[in-house]
Image (cartoon, rainbow, N blue to C red; front, top):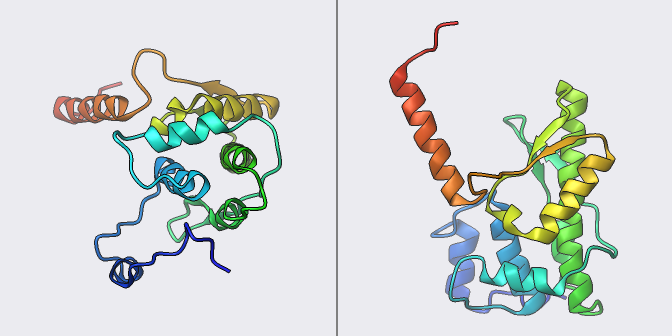
Length: 186
């Protein structure tokens, strides 16, 4: 049985989604939190970006059960997190809202740690930077930070530049200016 939040009742919307019409794919973790807030909390509308994920975070705790999310390497060699086990887990109304909200945070933090371990095994890198708007989520940032440190990583978090789109804009400007200046002589 398909969970009601996973079913798209409007056949036109479902057809557009299945064909990819006005339904762009995204690798942003924030979109996963939006979707999980819709499934777990039934959030259909919000007033500002991040509102639904904030509600999801408010209902979550730092402990509980969660499904392990498979890490799949794509054709370009990039690791991708398979969210489908989380969809099934959180679509189960037999679990409390708090348990499902917690599972979203715990599963993503666990996947972040496993991706970092795979990268360390491949490259030797032992420093991880946690950036992106999703790390404004204090629970997720704390879980990922603690899990990475337990595994021997040095974890960097933004201090002066925001981890959200403001930081992205700063990085884009810095890259542009770097390209304008030309190569640096060593």
